[in-house]
Length: 269
Image (tube, rainbow, N blue to C red; front, side, top):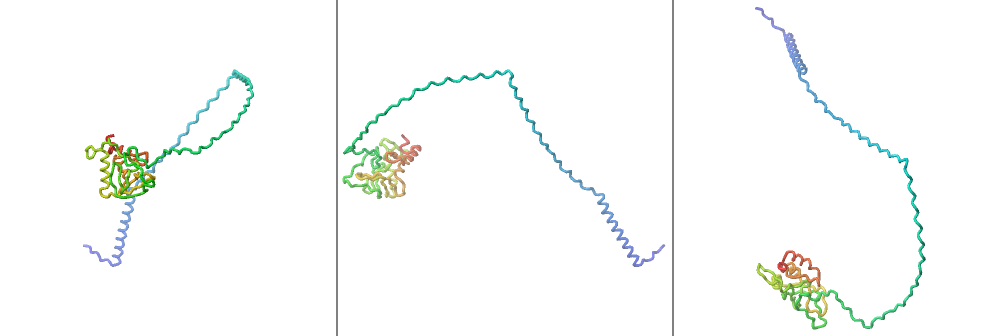
């Protein structure tokens, strides 16, 4: 049996350094071998770009050669000159005799002109009564007035002590028929009923006479109720009155709407 002699400290240190060196060399060899043997990434191929070559324009068509003039072309015949016009005879001069102007003397007492201008104080053609001259020559219907109203007709009121006919509207004819909740009724009576309903809460009205003139007792006026509603326009919208174009054209549109919608008397006309 062979016995190994114990090594000294320097020998052990040299042995350890050799072992460490061998281990380092083994690690380096492994890394280098892995890099050599590992597959390399394949780079993607570059994109293919197609070059578009523009087409060459087609050559223009060759101009047709003008046909040569014919050699045996006959010359154009000469145009004959027109005959000279005959001379006109000279104009004759005529003397105009001047007649004296006689002036008509003006009349000493000419008759007054008959004016047919629109008079807004005249009653409409369908108005039946209440148009009377005043007893006093200086009586004038006020321009504006107000007071408690009382219904006296289809389009007539009494405001205070002034009889009023609503301006610009005419009452329906006695033959006009209307309906109230499906029941036949005279349009004149229905117009009175609708006016009385307007005065149910307040009978105060404000009236304005468009053209007051002396000698007229009845007032043809535009009247507004306590809510500011024009009573003439109200009756027209309900189809319970007609527009009086002899006094105004302001209510023609309201009459047309009621006629189209068949309100009131327009349901049976």
